Length: 470
Image 1 (cartoon, rainbow, N blue to C red):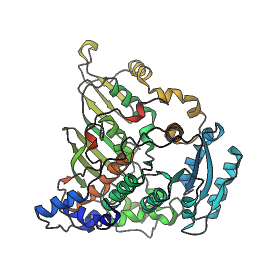
Image 2: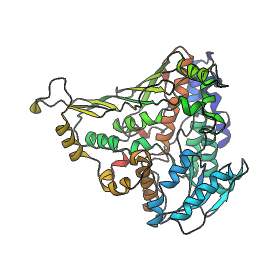
Image 3: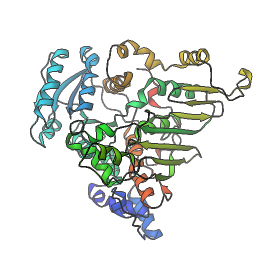
Image 4: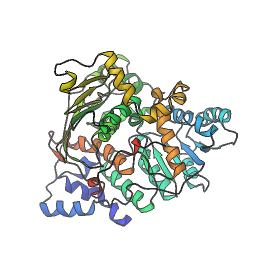
């Protein structure tokens, strides 16, 4: 496919779903499109990937030269995660960029304590980041900016010959999802979404148990992003220009799919022998965020996003996934992290395990006792987590170690010239559930077909790459 074809892709993809381009671009409208069967068939033929970036490899990079774009809360944490890699000569930070000079300087002061080479600094202009992408001495762009910049920055980086690692979500419209696929396949540059929860100790442990047959056949899983963000959303400092709450004023669906869906997709071999088929999505009414805004005399009101969104996904092989999103309600944090198989069940927050094997006499309704649970944890802990325990324990930040493991794996795969743990198809697929959930909600929770972003390569069964040891 050429680039000209993709200029009209958003509209054509809309026909495939029987929806207006406005809906697939996340506008909050209940309108429907009256595309006939021939139009839908034509649009499906256009909006198709080749799968040429599957198991993508590049020449080994002994020392990965990195440019970081966006140095707010998230970008600063990711910079900190490079300390061990820098000191062991696996990586070097070449450039730092942010709109705000003080953020660049603050992070550069820290960088000087862990790296002898000086980094170039870019700030003060909305286009300053482009100079980082255009440099010829950078291998990897690390993007940690507000959501609306993720797709254009990722594309610009790849077009300028850089590998890209972007914070979540990598896109939040279907049009941008297809653009990411097209550019990655054409440039053959790595494009990974930095979904850290796939690298958490609990999730890696469960994945390893599934791989070792402990769960038998997995048939259902549940993931979520349930996180009380009212204070952050309404704060005028935490999110620059309060960009995040503005999404809640105009959109209704699941805006943050990947924390719950990434690990679940690995559990179910999504893109590695199975694939999402269709979804339905429903949002509750909104009330909690409005009450918090009123209590703080906030300038924000009239929120479109419901307090809780629940999305149900069916896979090609008949498995089911429940995905939830709630950042409005005052309640304890949870990603659910539930997976059920024919031999075992896990439920997260707090982590509990049930073994359904007759010879162990666990036919009742009780979770494993602490000692039994610990025995499974010790026996099946992921080798990667065990290998990096010292480095993880040395970190006071990084979501309990998963941020470090994620960055470690990214850099070491680039060092060795290996395929990345999360590929571009994973990145786009997990992100695409956002606009698809919005389309379903806007159309009375109708069933929405999920496109195949892999060009059919999902049928090639293989293990999740994160099960490899590096």
